[in-house]
Length: 320
Image 1 (cartoon, one colour):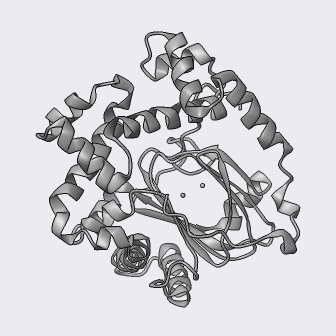
Image 2: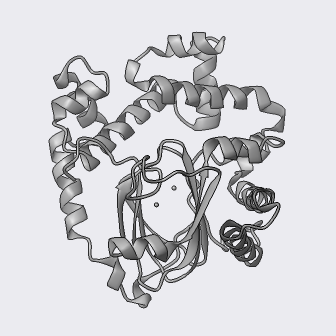
């Protein structure tokens, strides 16, 4: 990729002056993919959620640099800012629904906890999403498409209602057993969510754990206890993971030099950035970039992948 930054679209291939997603946009997966030879290059959306219903066909998704086979049938949610791309089979069947984050908040206003459940990418299959009625999901997506393309009275209300039902099934499927057992630990759970939000906003500042704890009104010891208990890592490890993720993104998807990536991520010394990345990724930034680009160039074209080579992806809690 020759650009300096990861492409950021309203709708894939269209800049903000070309596409205006007001409340919701719906189209068949093939409608946009065929224009781009079934290959949707890695990109992200600042303020948009996307829901994919895969009914038939297949292909592969690239999620934050990791290839994932598309589940058939399957239900996929991609929140804002998540880097993703697709290589679709030519026989792909399904829908993609794009929703503005403000609309998501409005739809889930009476159940705000569901919004947190949908804050991470998710892939749901019939095997793993036991609470999801995939026949009903297929009907709901068809109804969303029908309402989107019609001009009948109450169209937006109908869209909102159908989307709400999809979100409920999706959120129920991705809620883990651990979260269900934490009904008596709502305060710790809230602290964990608030910490993750702070990290997302401030990871480039390289603030110490004590600064995050102060913002949350708790001690660093308590913050580490919350993080280890609910997130499985120390607070510092979570901050470092977020820095490393962004470094990986910039090295894979942009042509910025290592020094430029270092500056973008708030490192005052490129040498320290290189040591940080090498320690955590087990490769230097330059070696990582070479390895990832070589891997991408060596992957076969999935548009002609035989059906026998495809297999449904296992549901992933952590997934134009």
